[in-house]
Length: 129
Image (tube, rainbow, N blue to C red; front, side, top):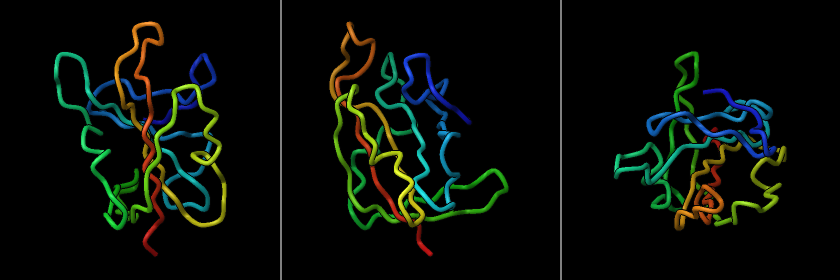
């Protein structure tokens, strides 16, 4: 899915547990800059979600995506970082040189007051040229 900002000015999220959302206010995966894709984890009622295994990725792992034209683009994991849900994570959306893909999902416990998880995990990758 192509998403922009939610009402609270955070990145909007995909609709369902099997969907991912590309942040359309930034570059597309494979373009110069940091493309960002979000997906769900720990979906309600124990249903599997697309990013359930995201936290298991480690430096050197390869992540491949297929773009809307059917082209496969591969990225190598550089590391990951945990954020609070209210953090201003400018490094996630950075337009730094290079071609990056940053994958984001919820982590931690569910907070009824936040109506969301207590943490976010971001996996940072660089495109395999």
